[in-house]
Length: 251
Image (cartoon, rainbow, N blue to C red):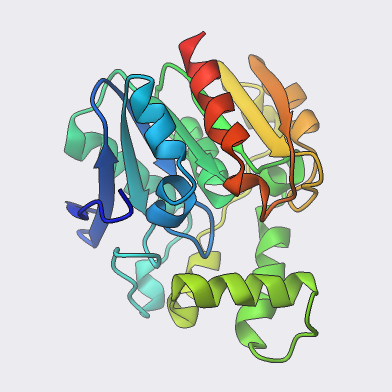
């Protein structure tokens, strides 16, 4: 399943973007995290297979600047909120009107931006994300900007070193990924309070990278919080993540 073929769709500006698909049934769009890809985030650790087995048509885009999607170096290709634009373009391309939507880390933030921009899933999943990562997206970008502009200089075992090591495993383009940071948009608490979609917030017990998942769930009108083992980098590999998503969508 790690060899799922890349399918193509046009971004809002016509950028050539990729997505992968597994299973049949109710559509579920899942968006990966920063530096990652659809195949790494959702396929490699078995989450897509679990969800497909539970009756979902799992649709997994590669964000622009990532994976098999276009990774232009032109700053004009990375306006604010373009990742949400691309997500909405995928919904339009597939003609989805009755679907579920979620993401991990940057994928969760992108999900929130899509919700604020008019996406209407039946349910939403925000994984690997806390309140600060939504309301202060710029601050999270500073960490990665430091990583991408100082590659090869970090002490082994530091968060920066681990981020660079992950970048190497996914073969990411540092220039394009720097541009992606320019797309980050904050969502304030007042905007979160207007999002009435039933939502699962799920984070690792030791994941503090994006602030508090429990606080994020509290800031949303109809959200529940679930904790699984792991930190930001390891929780995504835990089978409990796919199971938590599947159980929530089945309720």
